Length: 515
Image (spheres, rainbow, N blue to C red):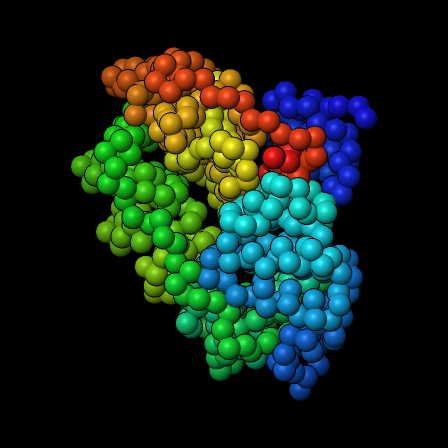
């Protein structure tokens, strides 16, 4: 079969069995939309008809759920989720086969999916992020079809534009009424924003709310409305609150991480962004939160009020909102209980869907308004392409999530990383798996220096004037290799186990089987 070469030089087959025809990545903003928004089936409910069903098995039979369908789920319950396994157990009991699971992120708690793969209940997986046993099994080639890895904005776009057609969306609802109004801020499994479930609810053919907290009608506030929900099922528990709250929302105490974070804040200041109206996104990891800490200090010293902070919201961002450092929070996902509390109480804490947050094919996603974003990396290469999908062993251990989306939208995209990870250099000539293209990455900050993408001569001059420790990315790579040596290349097989889509639906890379 003929090979295609995409805009970052990755060779791809024209067609991938189990995925389809390949559209090669042509550049971060090169692909224009040429489709219409998908229209789900129109239905009605008459006065007196009930949406509340006795159990999931009843709902499966009424829809009906049949072989070959795509069932979608959101990941706001993270490693505490109980709904995916619950739904798939019903599918297995009813003898349904060849299902595609469209789950916005996969966690260790979802390991039972593997048993359903062995029995043929599940044959496909469509997700934005993976960790744990499922990710390891994908890397070993245990799924019948290649897994599709999207970005958070790319998933919203794919649902809206009909590329990812959802037959039935199962929405884990921390609070619901009997007519299908839902929110995520009440109940024992409160998770905050339901942003990643919103495109599913809007465009799926059938929508089923599963709740352990049935409230009187009408529920208030409403995140997902009754107009898009077909059935409501009450269960004993939708998830374990201990697994819902992220464990990575504390500022790092590691001296190297703190040094990187402080330098990152100096980069943002030197870029001229610490001024009224500043907008910011950072991750929930310790080093990223430390960068937010130093940015906060600079904002306070300059008496600056930012316009908004964006993305997955942590208690630290809530504190900055409540201190008046930001006027608004735009929240697609809450990471801790403070984020849940704030969303419930503060009118300036806004809940939005994944498409509003990051879709490239609409009239303007929130990421487009970002001044600065701080992101991590598993690997980065001398062309500033970033890998956040596979580890140094070639095994899938993550995914883009909002990485590529925020990088594309922000005025200044900063990658923060230790020069060595697990005694291996993070900079190489070519990343194993390209996730975010170098054209959307502006700066790399390490403990040994700051590298600026040659595309951004403006930033280089600003940083030079500010006295930042500038090095070329090649110099940083050479320094890392002097310390740790040149890492051995990863050996992979020919079988494609995952297709990495860029946010516009083109293929930026593929993941091949390891071992």
